[in-house]
Image (cartoon, rainbow, N blue to C red; front, side, top):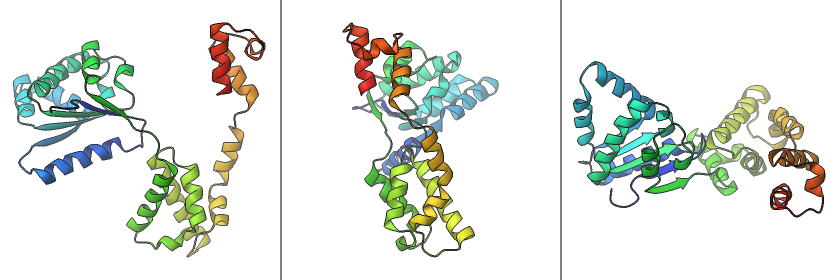
Length: 257
């Protein structure tokens, strides 16, 4: 509650934000069992807010939060456009900050990109430490796959190393997608091919539709030039020409990148 407060984790779905919140909460509890840690999603917070309007009143809800030492709030972006709830959350937020109690939040975007929330709330979100989560790297994806196989009480040798590398390269946009690809492969190999060992041939059969879609959606230079030119409101001939106006040079550099 003294440094990096609030801690703001952001990234797209499936990158482990909720997992990290629970990991932090469990770690704190393992080190100090007397600390009161609350995990709550924005949806649950909104439900609690309206329930208190009907039943107990705001003071009861505020008292509940006063007894908490660390609050972990998931998907804070869902408070957007809920003005009354946002106002109440602002008072809870200040209560925690002023009492040096830790707040950790997650969102699908960074604080300054949250639309529909009060500016004073967004600026306070940005006043702590904001950390972006990105898709797992190849090595991390490979380790995740091996751990998932162990969790299912299967031998690592059931899938060729080449196949694991194939999955780690092609399905690492997020962890859910990676896990889904592994489950699909195991289901196909065990139920349809009835194989004890899964090789590259089986993997390519399993994901042949994925390969076709990748080919279909493949970017080429013409499409990139067209999209960039449209975005910067210039023509493709200007983009490819020799003019050095600031907006044209920027668009040209973006297209080359």
